[in-house]
Length: 351
Image (cartoon, rainbow, N blue to C red):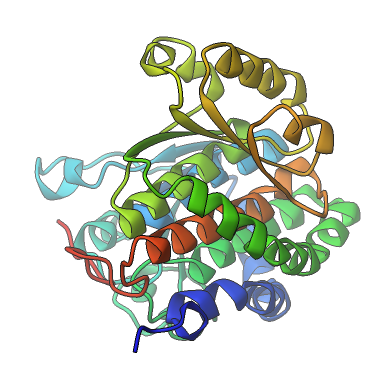
């Protein structure tokens, strides 16, 4: 008998996300506050983040939220500079942050090890506080997501986003930021109610062999994460872009029926995203819109209307959920095992 989708680890873990986020915001506030205080006390001027895969997409979110809201310059580490080429980047005055669900990848550990050797402030966000990576952090933030048995990461990703958002909120010293963040578990829970709509959308996209996902600003990370989930679970060739980069050449690939997923929450990019969608419609693309604005959704041929709007800086935690659901439903519609996609493992160790 075929396995029911609702019996899968992936289905369960996607639906655990509101509770995981709420627990992290409650249980890790002290550790995250310690990190914020250390950033101020050490006069940190920039942040270097070492991560891979899904965690790398969380790092992209950190670039925007810590940059736009806390005015910190955030760079993504290139671990091979150390592990392959033997160089020693100067980490002085930096926070060097390792983000990894498993805490097991040697190249991420190598970056944190060198940062500690140089005396830089180090921190780790991980789901395994007993990992080797965790032992390299002056401060460790535990995701507390529980075992994630599906290969594709979901609840650990949104937990990473929540940890980064809480760090930004504490650094800002604005009470309103923390109050807004406390509303996110309920907003994510309401977004899960779009699952039936997304299932129908997956039926429409069942035969798609390629796609593009577009997001910008805070949701540049969401475009990368949704594209990754679609690649991992459905074996579709999917490329993420910012709306700005997309117009600098990649627009040329669009033709009649080409599926383009547009992440368009309320915020400063409203006009830009609507203009982009009009351009895509003019080129007869199959536009799939994920938005909390009905008037924006109305511009698309396929749409997922997120039922609860949240501040733009927190929207990646709601906007990614329909993308996760789409990857799951599309994989299931194609008869794939949503818990164990081919060729990849839960823990990947690179150097």
